[in-house]
Amino acid sequence: MNQVIQNVSDAAFMVAGFRALESERPEPLFRDPLAWTLAGEHGRKILATVPKTFVGGWSVVIRTVIIDDFIKEAIEQGADTILNLGAGLDTRPYRMELPKTLRWVEVDFPHVIALKESRLADERPNCRLDRIELDLTDRALRQRLLAEVGESAEKILVLTEGVVPYLSNSEVSDLAGDLRAVEKVRFWIVDYFSPQALHYGRKLRTRFMRNAPFQFEPTNWFGAGAPRRSATSPRKPSGLAGRFRFPCT
Image (cartoon, rainbow, N blue to C red; front, top):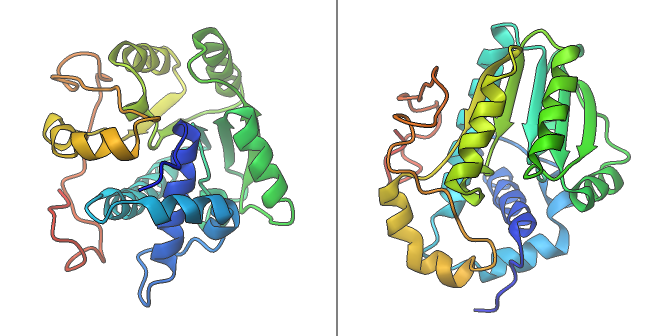
């Protein structure tokens, strides 16, 4: 197995590839027609190295469906701004039906933003879309960004899909504190791995993703350090039944 993933940003190409493969299924749970456009040949090379025992593919599909539902619910509840921190190669502003007045802000490293600007230059998003180049680990710049976005919003949904696992416990705690300090932030969609899941895939990740290791390993995330108003989704989104052997709840 050749090592292709060299950094955290490379994981975004893998995720885009998984979404592209799901879109090619006869009855996909979602359609992401721009996934291969962004993943490109680099994404295909990464997928070719993914071990057969790696469960990342089905987990990406499941979380994509769940997050789509959460975003729709937040918009119904009045969210007028989506702040996607560590947006990677996500294409929701293009593939989801969204209000034209919705503002969607994508934040990521400069080289990721540049790639999306180039490969999606001829595509038109379904809402107001802004992209901002920023290293999210720079707390001062992150706090300034949150303040600026909050000035023009009434109700913000923050999305950190696939971001938290790569941050340290203290970095996640700081991020939670920064979000809590912004009054306009009313929703935060965050995914992370339980201690059991981390233990299950540790040996495989050490080989396959050693250049992009998971760092966030809390013992009690919802007991200390998490936002005070936290919620999980116990329901199974429609369409998942029969597709996966592992529980979705």
